[in-house]
Image (cartoon, rainbow, N blue to C red; front, side, top):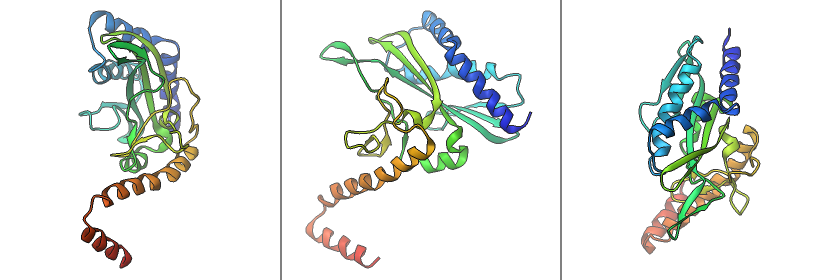
Length: 231
């Protein structure tokens, strides 16, 4: 079995356990034996998902590694002959939000998917078509009650858009935000994602520059403008 056929086999198996509810049942059983809240579930659920995927692929000539910590990407790292084959990141989002002491449905997850500045290294290392998300939607108020849905797809299909039509992001750090739970992917292909990113990243940087430029002293503004003119 060569690299491409192995990749296809891995994807077929993970798609199967997500679509046929096997992973859903596995996590539901875990909820029956353990208690979690919305504040911690997004972190702790990575473990049972990892072990399930590791077991699922145990008969293949692959190395399935778990991320060393929360800052390492992705959560599940699949290698073939020492080379990156597939990266699977686990995302978890509550379908409810506490609002005036009541738990109410929300239309969009609050997750961060990536950062504008961190994205290039990840794409170069793994390849844009080889980064996938297992996106777990659950119901918590505040304890996790149930698994609502599990979606497995390429990372860019989860990226959202803002009201201005640009890619959705957090202004202060350029963290890319997800689409609404039930809407079709605004970026259904890697090419459309890259095009959307190209349209968004310069306006984001300009907003940051303008914000900090306004805080400079008059002398600081003049000095900076002179430096820029001389570049």
